[in-house]
Length: 93
Image (cartoon, rainbow, N blue to C red):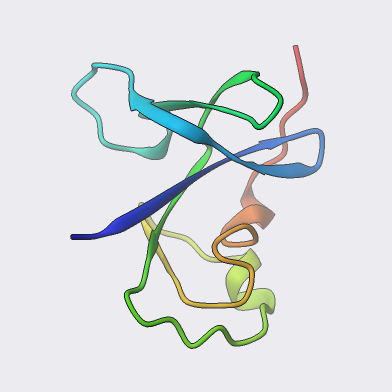
């Protein structure tokens, strides 16, 4: 079974979401999932990462930060935190 991690990017920071749920729509894109930050804020996911079963844990580089695609497969040391991060900039409302 695949293991997924969900992240939200807010004010230049990447936050892993916990207790993630689907919003009930038909889409399976990252934006269709909502989770909670460690401090209890509810946020919509901006990225979802499929964790590889046996990751190599190599150092992150530009390939991670500029990754594209609906689901990015992670095996580097960041655990998905940096994958695709170069694509998203958001601010708090």
